[in-house]
Image (tube, rainbow, N blue to C red; front, top):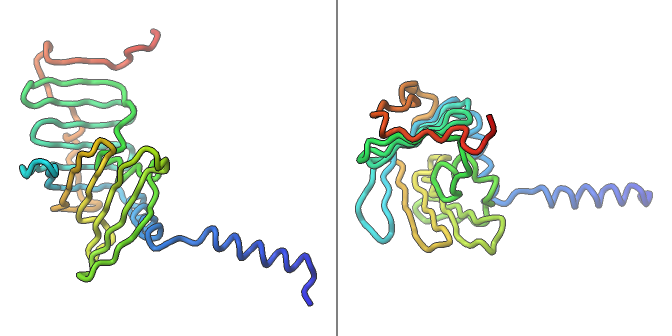
Length: 209
């Protein structure tokens, strides 16, 4: 007969193992997270459309290790470098420079690179065609909304993202190009030149000098 102390130890180990065991959904999510953390750069080209509008929008997401990030669409570009952010409004030819502020959780870049802060994996659906659909939801269920990432059978990165925020809008992103560790033109992170009257510089706003 095992001593009482050994029985308690075995019970504790079993309970700890059960608590730490990942579900298939959590395992796939962890695999994606580790893959992203191991990269030096990532260049994504995508097509996006809102559920209420079939018009396609082409966009590009670029991330480079060292907290450099660039997101480009036909209407605007956003770039983050360290603690600063610039936004370029193309039609208005206007540049906005400011300190980085809190971003919406319902952006593709937030889901890919910062989702662990706000989302958890809750379900993994294995479809007959081999696709896997991973569903995420906010840690705070009262907030509502979900994110789904679709992985093809032979890839461990998503080929599609569907964002369903609490306001009821639905955005579908189809990944056309997923290029890891390729060369990135550093000029992407340089803000465009605009007439001085079109430059809005809020860096340092609200801080004492």
